[in-house]
Length: 224
Ligand code: CA
Image 1 (cartoon, helix red, strand yellow):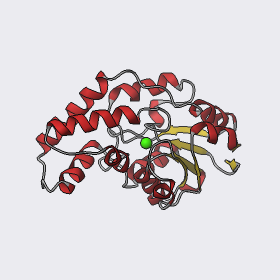
Image 2 (tube, helix red, strand yellow):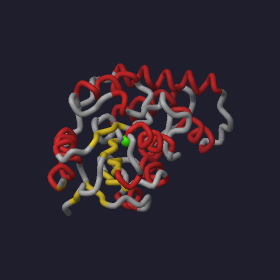
Image 3 (spheres, protein in one colour):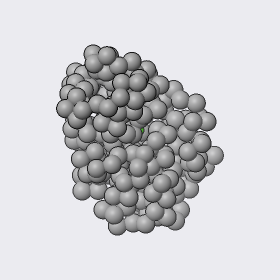
Image 4 (cartoon, helix red, strand yellow):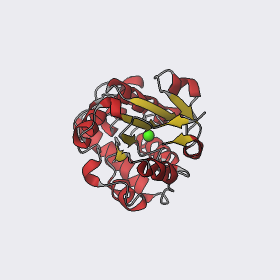
């Protein structure tokens, strides 16, 4: 399938699982960190919660595990440990094909923005170097810029606001069900890219306009 960006003015990229092949490292860090605190978090749990802030993820796992309310202090300790374990892992690679998608979009005159639930400083800094000339901090939205993360529409609404564009003028590239839900809640068309282990159906039921199986496949199909 060919996908056209005609009539669009901006592409909003999610980061983990879209611009970086970082989800396997997040999975490893989450599963180990939460196990240390007595929680049983599975690989699929990580992918199903992807896009949420760390605090929201911990709250939903705690509820699912029947452990009830978690104090803000405990949440901070758990998320700090998860971040620490993530940083100890080998540096993650850029997602194959992602730079080409960005280059094509920029060549077509589209504005590039990154919208991530991540609060992990390392990648937020790195993305500006790895995607230099395309990604700039003033047009990025991170966990530090909004109170409510995905699946609330807030990060995407913030991106529209700072980007000076309307929902109709934007298109989002997302790999996570809750990320797609957030963008749809903001009224924005979404291209789903299934770079993880979830069934396509789980992403498709959130209502993307199309689904690709890799960023390279999207790059090959993109018309601007
Ligand atoms: Ca993602």
